[in-house]
Length: 337
Image 1: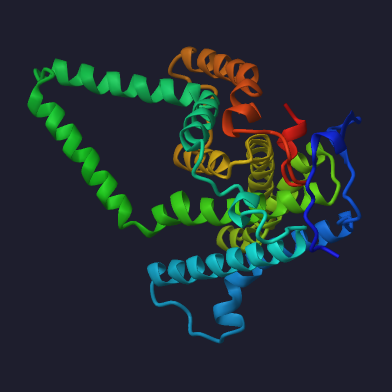
Image 2: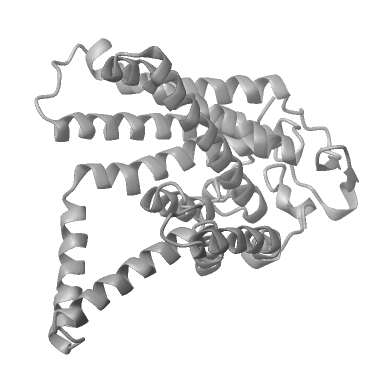
C-alpha cells in the first residue's frame, strides 16, 4: 500500500486554503493514500521508543548499572542512536517512496545543497529571540574591560592572546565534556532526526494540514520529556515541584518544537532546525527582563518584533531549494510560498 511514489506535477496540484493551512489536493495516479491514523500511530511509537529504549540496558538487557556518569551517558547515546536508526528505517518503509527515483536522504531533509543558507538564515532568525541575552553578555564584557582599565591593565596584544588562548581551552575542554556532547550534539541530532525528519514527512503524507503538522509534531516531542517527571520527583521529594518543573519544560519544548517544525517544513532542510536547536541549547532560556538596565527589555522587544517581521522572508522556500516544482507529499514548502 505504501510503495508508490507521490509525484506531484503542477498540473495535478490544486492549492486551496482551509482554516488552518494551505493544502495540496493531489491526483496520485492510482497510488494508495497514506492514512492519518497510520501516521499518528507511527509517530506515537517513535516517541515512546525514543524514551523507552533509554532504559533498555538495565531493564531488558539486564546490564549492571553504570559505574560512572560518563559510561551512563555513553549508554544513552547508543540507545538514542539505535532509536534514531530504527525510526529512519521504519519511516522509509511507511512513506510512499519509489526507490531509484528519490534519494532517501532528501526525504529526511539531509542535504548539502544550500547549506550556508540553512545555517546562516535560521541562526540569524533565532538569535533575534536572544537579543536581550546577547546585549546582557555584551554589557558584562564591557564591565570586565572597564575593570581592567581601572586596574591599570589596558587592552594590549598580550591580553588579546590570553583571551584567545582561554577561548581555545574552553572549546577543548568542552570536547571532552560528556554533558556538552549530550547538549550540543547527540540530543539535538537524534531529536531532530526522529521528531522532525521522520515524523513531519509522515504527518504531511498522512494528509494533515501544514499548520496542524507544525503544532502537532511538538506534542510528540514533548512526550519524550515526560520521563523526567519521576526523576525530578525523586530528586526534590515533591510531586508538586516535579509537576511544575516538567510542566514548564514541556511548555518550552512545545514552543521550540513548533518553531523547529516550522523551519523544517518551510525549508525542507534538516540543517535549519538543527542549528537552531544547538544554538538554543547553548544559550538556554532568553533573558527578557534584567534589574541591571531597561536596555535588556528594549532589546528583547525589538528582537521579538524583528523575529516576527523576518520569520517568513528568511524561511522562504526559494532560499533553500533550487526548484519548488515536481514535489512529493513530504515537500509541503512547494505549496507554502
